[in-house]
Length: 88
Image (tube, rainbow, N blue to C red; front, side, top):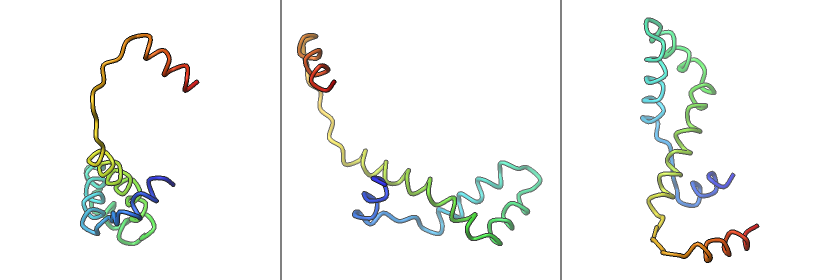
C-alpha cells in the first residue's frame, strides 16, 4: 500500500510500451510458444494487467532509491549498541 501511495503522489505510471515489453519477456520464457503466449495476453486484458504491478513496484522503488540521501556516520561500538537497544 505504501508503494502504491508513493507512486500515486509522484505520478509514477506504467506505460503500455512497458507492459508490451514485459509480455515479450514472458513469451521468450516459452520457446516455441511465443505466439500463443502473446495471444493469451492480448485476449486476456487482466492477464496483461497482472504484469503491471511488478513494473509499477520496480519503478516506485527506483524512484525512492533515486531520492534517498545516504551518508556515512562513524560510530563507536557502544553508540551502535545504544541505538540498537533504543529501537528494541
